Image (tube, rainbow, N blue to C red; front, side):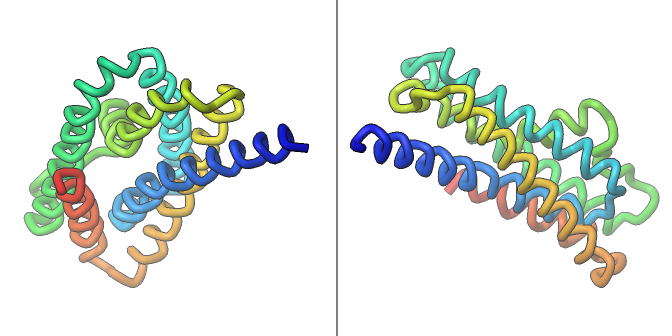
Length: 186
């Protein structure tokens, strides 16, 4: 009986961590969705984010405690810088009008950059996974599933908000990305 309750407690802990990591994907997806995004792009972006939410914790685990403690802050700061740049560029593009090229989430580099920026905190979580997670496959698949689901929810909600925000949707989305990027530094 004790083993069953310990296993359920561990599963609940993993789900709570997955939700917390997925909140970044939700929040940033909300900002990106306000820019205006097609449903096919929602699926594509969310799939890549889900994959990154699997790869990044595994990367953190294999890097080990020492290397991650050195790079954990650097990775977080890098993610913050990426979000500030993306948000600033979206705001600039929306205010400049058609002249400035906006962040292209449909390009390979843009998609990878966005997925990396919302998944970078998963790498530092990966270090601790080896200490308490007995079922690694369940853990990383749960992280990937919640990253996917929560990014779909954020992107779709952002799409709907963009409908009533009109021309200012991209500006609002850029502000959201910018604020979350700044929060990485706090």
